[in-house]
Length: 438
Ligand code: UD1
Figure 1 (cartoon, rainbow, N blue to C red):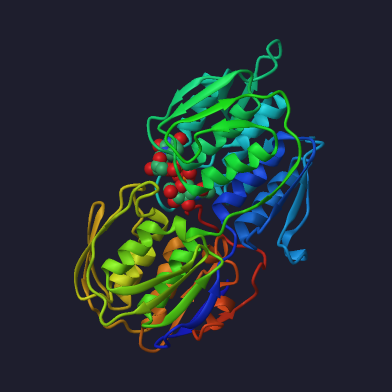
Figure 2 (figure 1 turned 90 degrees about the horizontal axis):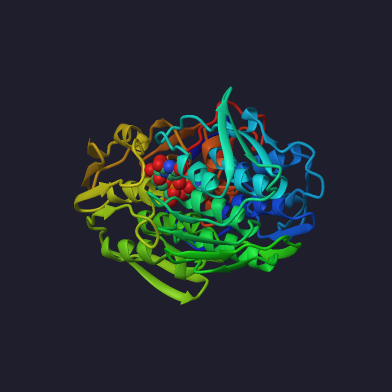
């Protein structure tokens, strides 16, 4: 299992570049199922989850080019033949976002068989809202032997439009039903939708493929279904969570870092909070931001919310920063239960954190000392790396395969701006037990 060895104490200085958004690329790859033509996606991040999605599509009969083999980091996906519209458990169990193929598969082929994702390190994470929506669009859904079977009545042949009001805001649920609605007969009105930029990426790709969609990025999305979609080329937006992680890294290490290739419009809540915590942030244009420590960091509370609120995917990294801030910071997690797995490990490094149900009380500044720590999920790993960057001595961060699910060659990016970080082991070696979080 790969490990990072990190010697803390170096301020990060220079320019660090953000890759494409994993959480946009995953649904956009699934959207390719909706057409027989080629879909070309650029700016694909070279991370493990993307590789998993590629293998999933290939297992269904699709042809998927590997993005690591060209400078554009692009992939060409052809779903001309989908010989097996099945998402097998062996793949779904390693990445919960595999359920994103459900809507496209049933919309394109009239039938889908997708393994149920099961439990996950950051809570139950059901997909009941995806299923409810597809049922409203005319799919008959049964669950047997750990699989979800969805079918459209052969006499009808296609999903139909529906009025869907999400009980709860769900990002992949919104994307899944949006993709299904694009090829459904008639109009679909979706309310209480997720407004995340990743949903906008999916809507923009579908529009380029010939879909008729309005309202993406707001709570109400309207789709006029079309009978077929065609190929398209689309560039995936920058990863706002990777960008936020780098901003936190610049601030926590007392550095002077330019985070380039990002979309600053997607970073509002994170930038505002880092400023409140005492960091200095300067926008250098629409795609770059400079972060500098500006005297001592000070405590500031966060409470995770759906976009445009503070992202749950930045909660763990912010908590690492809060351990270095003067005063008491309250960190409240509202989106997922059980998303404080990083706390124990931060405490082992010397942080003072107490958890009471969904709120963690962080007292700072704490003198962090290097330790052997273990990653439990994707964003928890990022928080441990941030803590190790300021801890005294040499930390060993184990199980970095969690980090590799969503961060492209993070050790190379961080060492390029002065971090002392080294990987022990082989990136993309055969994987061991994986978590589904993030
Ligand atoms: C996506 C992101 C993940 C991020 C999360 C919240 C991807 C691939 N992953 O995950 O990184 O942390 O959004 O921003 O884009 N829920 C239900 N029923 C459902 C679906 C969701 O109860 O059918 C609940 C979940 O348990 C959770 C909340 O809704 O409490 C939000 O989950 P959701 O937005 O669906 O998260 P994901 O789309 O899985």
